[in-house]
Image (tube, rainbow, N blue to C red; front, top):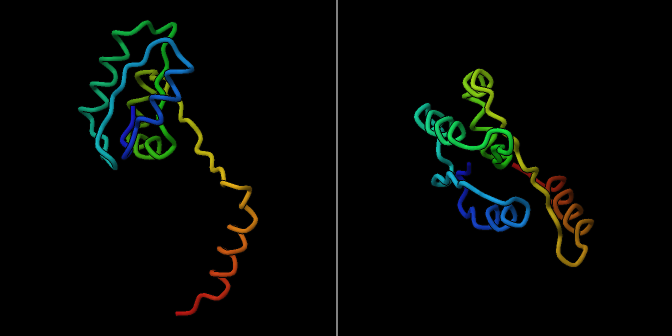
Length: 108
């Protein structure tokens, strides 16, 4: 389940990891409503529960927390893929310094 601007990278990654994917994709920043969770439950209930999990992004997991009680009551196995950041050309230290310097020099 995802509500991100471009879910293709997520699908590409998952397609290399699992046999079958049922994609529930919403527009970016979608506020998950009860009807969305009801549909998620319906789709999950129709799946092979012994071999199925629900994967989302950390970003979407935050918005799904509003439905925590429903998720727990219905034993929906939702897992969030962690976000990782990689810097091209090993420029992490340069980036960190740029941000630190900018913050230290910031004036109102």
